[in-house]
Image (tube, helix red, strand yellow):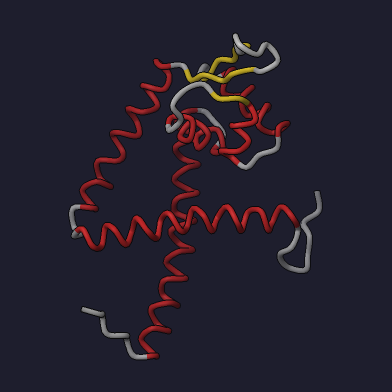
Amino acid sequence: MARPEPPPGRRTELVSALSVAARRYTAAYALFNQVLADHFGLHPTDVQCLNLLSLESGAVTIGRVGELTGLSTGASTRLVDRLERAGYVTRKRDRTDRRRVLVTTVPERMAAFGQVWDDLTDDWWEMFDDYDEERLGMLLTHTRRTIELCALQAERLRAGTVGGAVAER
């Protein structure tokens, strides 16, 4: 059964409210990420890199770190330098190709990192208890589409195709 379309005025109100809520959500997550980074004594990008590395199946190259984070090779190298100094990753030459350097997470440090995430995510799991399967599916679809759109918009910003003013570097 198709859902009835909200009256035109209601849709406009909902989209407007969603726009404001999305901006607040983004800011809230960025600020939360800063507090989390402060807790670990890391940069916020470092925390998200560890998050992304924890989703990988094994060691990765610096190039892969760049793919995951959207950073240049030089910036990815500096990020890995920071994570290595903090004890979260190690670098080793690839045994099959000595030119390649592999970045591996340190299990003990990642376990401590993961424990903090586990302690914090319980509240999110409880929040999801309020949603039925259809709404969870809609949230999943929205989240996946947002990830894709963020990557596209980041590329537009890097290419300088957005807005008239360019930030000075």
